Image (tube, rainbow, N blue to C red; front, side, top):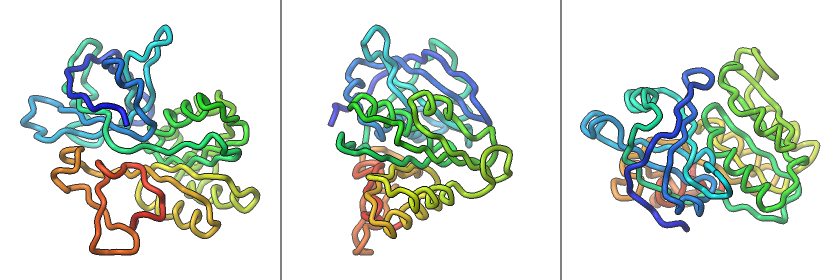
Length: 268
């Protein structure tokens, strides 16, 4: 795993994107080039007193300039005071950042058919994952992204996945784009037609629970990236504990043991 750094970083850009969402670039040291898709960073926002705790953000992509990794990208949605403060950042502003943290997706270069499922802002780590799949030489023409959101405005980055050669299937709750249903419905329909070698997913817990159920029913390896509240990001505060499958008295921690887990390892 790559080293972890606590450093003051500089905002490269912070652009509005979609419904209350923002796309941010951050200049970091070159050590982030060893980051694994699915890992995250913790940002201290405001004056460090309000909000008191750091906020976790998945690494959305690496910033590559002239064949050098100079930073990372974040994709986030304004949902509270912390992300509201982050949305006001401008180019040149400085932030206190800890990362990269956690365990990411395990990618095998032998996979032929890959399904990805993203719900809302849960799409964030899946673009970095797709970049890594391409880097490892996988042909994404047989990959399918199932992308769901409340409305059309919540369907982020779909063009970027399509540019990689991936088929993109969209769903919305209000029917403003794609099928009007949960994203897991077309996922299961596709599984019935062609069982993939692996499913990667990130999104709300209810979505992940359904994806995990599909994977279990069809005996498909499945990796899920958990979205949860974190206080420290390093496994000290125990605030992100989840129950381990098979033993309700044993817990794993999303920040330290995850955020990516095999779907049959934890209770959703």
